[in-house]
Amino acid sequence: MAQINLERAQRPTRTQRDMGATSRGQMFRRRMPASARRQIFLRRFVLAPAREALVNETRTEIDDVEAMTTDVKALVKEMGADVVGIAAYDSRLLFTDAPERDHRFVIVFGMSMKYDCLIDVGPRSQGEVHRVYYTLDDMAVRLAQQIGSYGYSACAQPNMGDIPLPAYGYLAGLGELGKHGSLISPELGSSFRLVAASTDLPLTIDGPKDHGIEDVCASCNICTRFCPGDAIKPEKKEANGVLRWHVDAPACLPWFYKMYGCKICLMVCPLNARGRLKAEFQKVAADIRQVKDAKGMVRLIEQRTGEEYTNLDGDGGDGDGEVSSTDR
Ligand code: SF4
Ligand code: SF4
Image 1 (spheres, helix red, strand yellow):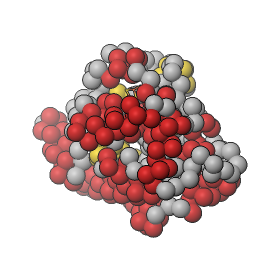
Image 2 (tube, rainbow, N blue to C red; image 1 turned 45 degrees about the horizontal axis):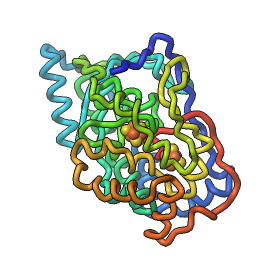
Image 3 (cartoon, helix red, strand yellow; image 1 turned 30 degrees about the horizontal axis):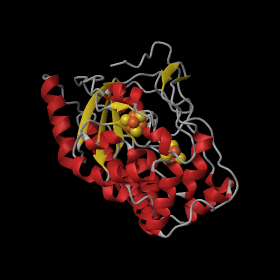
């Protein structure tokens, strides 16, 4: 495994996006399913204000850190997460606009997206993204508040929180960063979302793990070939002092807006077939063989959904920097 070298890492800048600034962005917002709008409201106005745990003045001393770690992981799984791991909190991996915290650990957890919704590449997939994000944010807030009841500081870290979630997913051992810019899990493939809670509660760190994913990405180009925006670069690039796979956000965004968040790169990743999605991926594998490239895939999706993407126009994408599965 090529470990990601963080020696020269600098705090990343958050991708800024003003959806109202382009006609495609406005269209993306207008076509959002009603369920997604409600979940965005709940995340922004109910869950986000509860991110910071209320800390109990009477602290419970933790004598057995291993047992505490096991309990925290069990609680997260009980709440509905599919995977959970612990990373060390690293102030170099904090968005430049985020406050520094005196935290030492990050509990990162993921929940699978229904793959049949993801491959729909339409309103159903967008609805599924927001269902999973809402559920995860709710879990992270509950976890942070539980930790606060032990007398330790904790903060839920949602998609728009202080930290880049894919990087922390890697550091927690949940997977490796794929060429498509998102974390790939050995169990859940590319079809899942992440959330986290940072804390000073004593825990045991899992750390990065070799899942053999980096080696597959080095010799695979399927996401690059099927990306309609030609946004997934075949080579690694240094960003914020870290050499890693790179997705060109301005090239991705027009398709992201047109195609309800797109996600073709997540759908076609053959590592979906390694874990739980082995059977479900067979249908997509047949499509990959049949349509051969990005144009063919967009045409196939148009035929299946009755949507028009190829000639759907508007002004260009906005934003810069990176995109990851926290966006798509
Ligand atoms: S499609 Fe291939 S190159 Fe792209 S992320 Fe998946 S395994 Fe890596
Ligand atoms: S979301 Fe679509 S346009 Fe963006 S990188 Fe993935 S495949 Fe390319």
